[in-house]
Length: 574
Image (cartoon, rainbow, N blue to C red; front, side, top):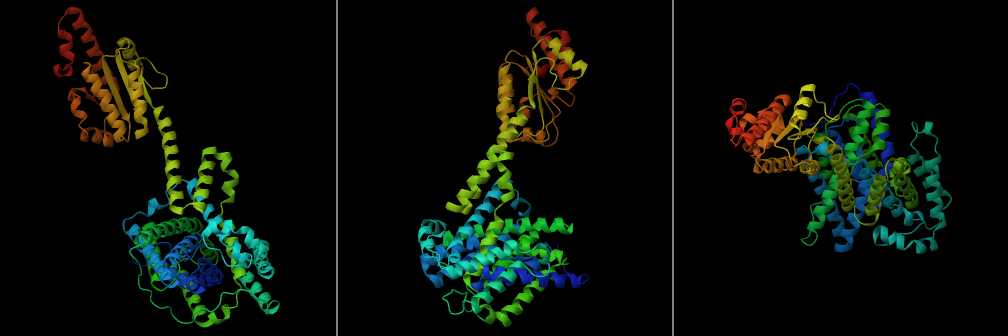
């Protein structure tokens, strides 16, 4: 596997144009997320440059554009707020950048452990609720700057509690600028987006109006952006906060993985290629590690930038590298022209991002699909907004998986049949039907098919307990590709009960994983080798011979007849 991403110069013009276009979109978003996070505009810009450059260089999705995103900014906002409140502004920020480094390290580990294909294996109800909850958080966090005020302490709950005060002290000029920004973003014609991104237009229009019409008014602006390369941020932590930082780093890293790989799937669908998930996680991890080392925000794959890059001609990692270099030139040469941007304009842009993150399409249809699915989604939204991101995902995945297992178990339970007569749901041949009829209820055919997951164990026990008068038990496992431990132990219980009551047990069609599972658990040792068969008809014949032999033995008062001894191995009687 190549260390770097897919790089060649056969598509140089398309890659350069795609990178420049993505950079134009990235500039207002980087400023917006930097200010919204509390780390400052510079942190957003350097996050966009460093994460974008190294993720493009070492990642596994050639057209992916990586930068600070709405979901990552929401987590970073909470991390910065918590650490600065506990340790002070300067130390708290240094520790927050250390969390970004930890997130990168976790992502590299995920990639090295080849966990990429498992990251996005989450129920859509949970992903939808999680992302919608993040969108709601981002909207709520913009309420104060949208109204022209500083955000109160306490995060989302603190803002909600202070809503009456915020509205009572509204700054009309800043609210006008924020409202104008949102209006431009919503009303901007789609056909013009290829020529000028609406975010950049809103940024320019809002800034010019604030400078020329409201120049003397008291309007909050993003302020000075440091010129020059960023200084190295050494890892900083305290014993009291180390556990919190590790958990925050894990959450940030996991969210970045999900965000990036979901965007990689979008890129695959547009380019008809296939990304390398594990390599992409390593690239994302390197990008975030370097970003944290130089005081940048955490980032991930950005859907908007990726789509624009591809539509503009980008096809290799050269486009992502070009985008990062263009932003670097802007920061080093033009940063003094960015200081007059009003905070309210950035709040309007962030508010629109939050609205776009909310999964409105699924919210409208969730109740039509399933009431349970809708409840899971709304529950995850509520937990994400008012409790904790990791709790929301954990609870949502747990409940969704329990419901899925219950549904699969019910479906698989229908594939567990215990019959002593002709059953229309089981494809018995005429000879097998005749054998069961001749056995007169003394032969129990236990038919299983499909994967036997642990939820099916109850059905095995239930079916087995329904009939207790049989003399021979035939287990047909021919169509069982996977046998779970719990289901295997349920089969063992049925076999042990049969043996203890002097019944004969026959196993049919044991192959592959199912056979290995029964052998490793020692269950095969309870069944004589002569009672193992690859053909169900032959096993039923053996069972019938045993039943008839038992009947003759009972009627003659002897252990068995000579005829039975000729057809059944002596060990089969026990």
